[in-house]
Image (cartoon, rainbow, N blue to C red; front, side):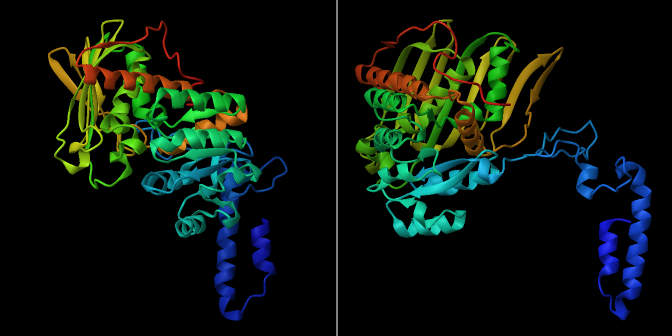
Length: 438
């Protein structure tokens, strides 16, 4: 007889519950008998309910699928690491991205956890700490930040600050003995990027730039199609990332803080994603800027910038970013036997693939839909995996430096109104590290 039935029989039973309990016991015994041949071990002991549906080792759980093989696969269970084994993160900056996306993403992480907060607003930090179970002792401001070196729970500092502060806090984090995950763009200048890389190398700490698109499933699938030449060679790519920005007082419209306008903030997605999916580096850039300086938003930074990337293999990419148009985030790849792309391509959620190709006398237009995954959880878990297994992150500081080198050339081209030649490289993925786990 199972222990659960014994427990039921051993508890005192009031008279009015006797009939119900007795009936429940009989039904339980009947049910257990019907599954004994399925759930009993060699000694005849009945397995628990979890054991009946679990087929993996003790630290991993798997369940039998509910749907037929005709349906979309859901993939394995999350099976997150125990909390005490996860890599601890300090979030630096509690603005929109941190509060709306990054902190909630820890709920989807398997290898990462938030253990500290850094903010110039103590009251906000206290509130957020309560929401996410962070100890008040692990709250820092920008002045006492360096004391984070004494916090053994913090393995990684995730920098989500205005662009001009990335270099300072990366260097301070490295000196404090912490690994660094830094938002894009990596910094405001090539020189700052080089200083960040040097600081982390000297401290023997890892530096990763938060290019979430390079960890996202749909973009990774497009990359596979392009690299495998599934639809032939790529001829042209068109990429757009624009939005209608609001408050003229926000830091993104302050050149000292942001380094630039739409190019540095959203145009970088077009540049970095094209470099990612092709693995190639452009050899020439040509750009033009269009800004209405009477608009109070654009007193210091550019609004719209169109730029063309030319590659050694003859491929061209036409890109555009803007701060004054309705939100549009997409790219289309023109290959020999199809066109394909993502629309939208760059948002935090809801990325959608599409493709069109000929099949006999039919033109097929498809919109494949992959499983939805949290992009921030994917990139943080990759960083955690690299720390645990001593691997170079897939998007290291060198990747951010290369983008900034090209961005500076794009601005120069727009200023001079002529093409600018770039350094030529042989090979693919020259600035990337270890591929993320599938």
